[in-house]
Image (cartoon, rainbow, N blue to C red; front, side, top):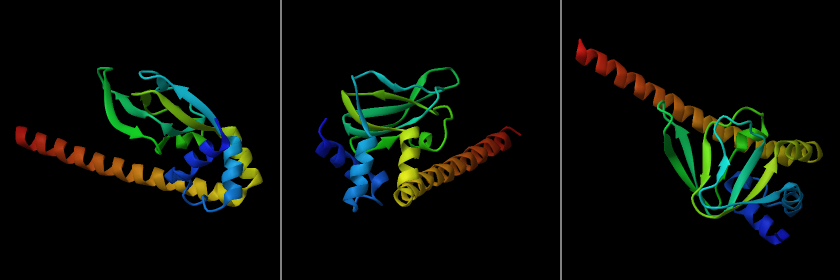
Length: 164
């Protein structure tokens, strides 16, 4: 893949919005990217596996799946070009919280944790801005999860009250 396409993928991704004005930083980020492809139907990430890579969708569409208690896959969301996933793995190597399946033929920019950490050692300012973006996204997810818990708790209480 040519460098211009990699740069374009970085510039078009919201995660990198705070650093795209600096061409040198984009060049340094492009150096740590790899390109990966997936065929339609291919599992890109499996729920429960250890994570160590961020994916930026250059081309195609993926779906995020979670397993129900009956172990049936449930589609949570669909992501298109310009979207990203796996960003938390840049901060830790915890297990993946969902499965990502390519709905169409896909092409990704991939940054692994070790390369991102090395980038941060060499370029602490831009790496801090990227880490803040990841933290903001994590905070948004946590707030949504809290709202979901409150909603579910309220529904449970209402159900119990109706049975009494």
